[in-house]
Image (tube, rainbow over all chains, first blue to last red; front, side, top):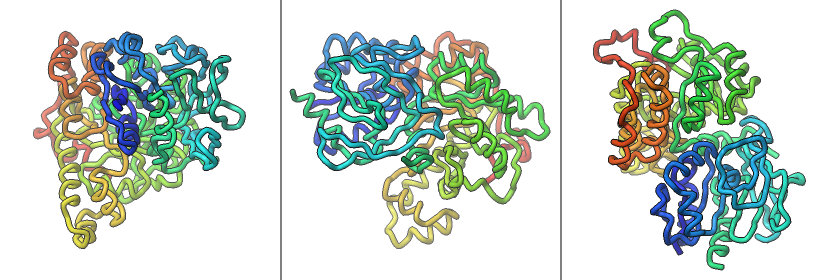
Length: 186
Length: 293
């Protein structure tokens, strides 16, 4: 199964390595022509303003619209999937019915790690690494909340779109990547 | 809930990979940098070329200036402290700066010791010219490394030298039998555990950016091809003729460093680069890279 990792900026290699552990074929995607043939696409952590600007410059939103891969966004990726970015005009793909607020926990000194319970992945807690993370302020009625931390959604799914405000690719725990691959098969 | 962990500090640097961090001296420049696609800005009172020209003691920027820049952009804001000046670092941490650069560009406050960076919740980046220097800084708690290059020179030659030295050092220890690593650690003046870890990983355990003399999109591509994880541009943008266009071009060149056709396209019509200095004609006391080794 061919899964892409958007390779414009961010922790691209960490996602590619998680996918390789699951024996997926991985393609680093920097240009529109590389979207064709993908079953899934991961938008990594990074700076959402940078990634968004480069996506627009290279025609990636149109290619994603045309080929419709399943998408998993982490942190910056969540912002780029959201229908609403609170108080910002920055670019988004507008695919996931959530409102996010950027850097809503604060600055880097407020970044944190915490164990998260994700019932869909079993009993073992997942180590949530939140780095200058966004907060999901609102979820639409068709959005499934797969995990929360202190009452706020941190892992959400709608149709073939998955988003986490934390970074599983920094933990070595590949259960969310495995879950995403199973979504790509469906 | 844990804050200030090694994973969180190194993790923020990982999020900056493939990006460009730009030196800015006010809110207006910070907005230009963000608009151009910078992943972070470095808040300074003067860019390195001007620090060099002004002479005297270069210190941490005015906290009011740094706050102004933090309020102007949504991307992470870094700021510099003098080598060994942990009080300046405490002040920057209290301001909520996202990353601290313990930098040879400012006048060192301690000629023997760097800051104990483990004590801080905020991550640090430090300059290095070789593998030993990089691993010493990581040993002190740096969450990110950059080449020193020669800041404010607009000349990429020193950044190239330092990147090749770090990469060459890693290749060398990768090929060594385990039993030789202790004497190599001694030779490098680096912590043994970090030498072993680096040999095993085949790369530094933290992100490694290029800095010090990058002035053109081609310079950014060169450094990325030599193995940099991303790019710092200091004087190279706001000392050039057309800062916004140059900033955008360097961002694209960092992403598409391996695509010469695209590099040709983005390098067109972006005005003159900063003039630059011949590093060979500089006196030893003018070099910034020999501070804090």
